[in-house]
Image 1 (cartoon, rainbow over the protein chains, first blue to last red):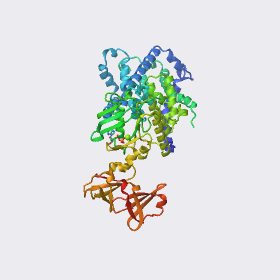
Image 2 (tube, each protein chain N blue to C red):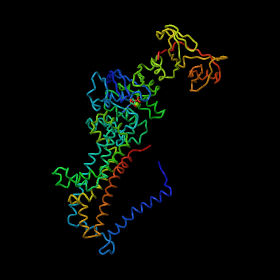
Image 3 (cartoon, each protein chain N blue to C red):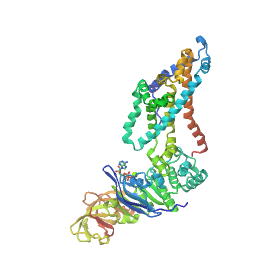
Length: 260
Length: 350
Ligand SMILES: Nc1ncnc2c1ncn2[C@@H]1O[C@H](COP(=O)(O)OP(=O)(O)O)[C@@H](O)[C@H]1O
Ligand SMILES: [Mg+2]
């Protein structure tokens, strides 16, 4: 189904795009300014790499984000599948629970929920993963739900089961591949939020990339903008890479099949 | 391929959804290698019966047996039953070949053996050249062929087909229908086929069971079902039937449309004066032009045959089928005299 855009649609799109892109361009330009605001150079970016603590902070954030993604997918995919397959009477309750974190302020989460975490967990930065799981749940729930609604889930599950697959095999071999783009989308939202989250990390005194960046920024204003732009683009780069990977692979495979 | 047909038995199976009785005391025995069709309108419980046999639906009373073995404690993925669904059941992330291999893959068969077997099956359903395609690159008919190959790949003891042709267009439908029957006979697999299309049911089946609101009204060979329907519902569902009020004149005779017919051949055992319904096939009625009497209201050309609707003074028209050549002589508005031949008239008390 193709729809042509009317002039009003175009105007809105262009205006919104302008609104969206201008700050990035401005920030990008700013981050490239030389010492004292003169000339343009990559010095601010190379500066980042030489800052004390950058490497460990980046690693911590990557680790936390990775674990959050895995935890969340592990938790949410079976849940959403279950809701769609017959747990319909629980659907409303689960939906409300999953959307609830949107309205809970992060501060109250940090103070309230932290007490509920096991002692052993409280002393490691992995504690943050559990908070990020909560924060990202609404977006992930929506994304996965939409993805599952787009496939003939009950039929696929029944087909797989009648062919001898256990529920776990069905999940891994049929369902997850069938909703790959939704799964990737959910993974990226979680990854991006976990990489960029600041308030919780600071409140709980963990050293992640955003907390490190805030400290570092106090010495070098250009550098701090370079950090934001740099992290933004690296996440974007990953996102584009991963979302095009299946398409590229698929295109290569399709070349072998002549479509008549 | 060595699939040995199994015996399938339903013993008094009942399934309720709230107040809806989807399946009511359903009993059926399918012989090894037999193809039995469940025929009935939408919502009569056909799918429910299949799902219970497949083990997908376990909330039922009564017993299902395969080769005499009670299936109650056996989950769907251990029943070894091949299923083909109405549509869209191919795994979207896999090629045709991978779909067919899937059942063997989850059984841990090594890749060489399963690839060989999948190729054989795709060959059998005429899709050997399409093995690398995904479902989006296959037509509806091709997808159903792959689904059939996939179901057969696990050498199932029973094959279940739930309206596998209903999403296809007419030509593909009759072609694939014949092919399913050919393959089923070649392999000799016990098959339960479900459809709401009586022509399809008649064409492929050893026996057809007509279902009505969760009940199995009658199960018989296609010709028996057509010629000796037990209920008006069956008569109406299997081919066109006129249902006409009649009054018993004696144990063996009824008065229908001013004619007394001897129907002792169908052993009705009527009580004189009893009001019954006569089920009359269109081909059992002949008409003759007359000066007055019944009036021809409709005339529809069906190819070699033409169907004529006649107002005989009842609430509904009665329908007659003539060869199109004969029908040329008759026009709408003509008066006709109606004669019924008694040998294929049935009565019911309903
Ligand atoms: N999951 C369900 N929940 C409630 N009612 C159902 C469900 N499945 C089937 N039914 C009801 O059971 C009856 C039989 O359904 P089904 O076996 O699917 O009919 P068919 O396949 O002959 O069209 C219908 O009245 C249907 O509404
Ligand atoms: Mg059905």
